[in-house]
Image (cartoon, rainbow, N blue to C red; front, side, top):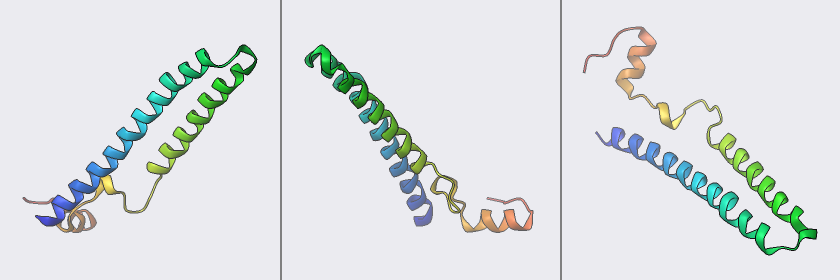
Amino acid sequence: MDGEVSSNLAKLTLFKQFYIVIIGYLCLTRIVVFMLRTIVAYDYQWVSNAAEETASFAFFIVMFYMFRPVERNECFVLDEKEEEAALSGMKVSV
């Protein structure tokens, strides 16, 4: 039972990090960039565009890193019974 709880907790922490990154990206690109566009002078409008593009680039890099292919993915962890059954080609009886 402890292994199942720890695997569920690992999945939840990954999704929690995902949602934090999403909310941070949305706040930065919608609120901060809008504030930059309204505050800075016309000659420096490129700063708001650069901030938006930099935030988008950083967001995509973080997403690619979080969901990169790994050998033991936390989202698809099987318990030992399921893994043995998958290797032997048999069905698991619960």
